[in-house]
Length: 202
Image (cartoon, rainbow, N blue to C red; front, top):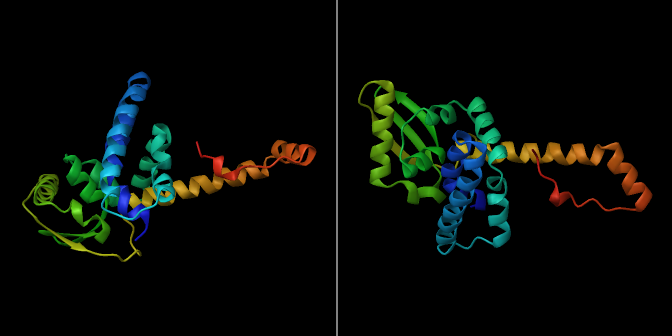
């Protein structure tokens, strides 16, 4: 299983905070949230065989709150389940359970979530119950939530949408920098090397 699948469940708290806070408070909140986030990741790493390089790739865009907000917003536009999660009043664990699953509505009274096997540790009874109650409240009637493990990548989870959007923005940024005439001139005149790994989208 990819590192993205194993680690991306822990991305939500600092993302929400960044969107709602003023710029001054946002900076301090970013630091605190990212520290908590890193602690959680380190704890999960002890249970896995993920390399430090893979971890860096997963955490990269989380370091930039403004970019993170853009990615989350675009994800909600592309994926209706992502948008629906934003309307739910969820605990942190229940939200991460939702973000790492995709939804299938069986009928009016039943909802099936397809959870990635790498995130099975999120499927706690408390998170399950909280998510079921939040969905029941949203729809206005009591429904039953069932969760199964599913590794079929044909349908993306909200977290996978975000990772895909980040990769798209990163590729666009790289193409833009490489095509920039000033950059091309500097590379030609001074035989300069462009360190593409340092390029980040804004």
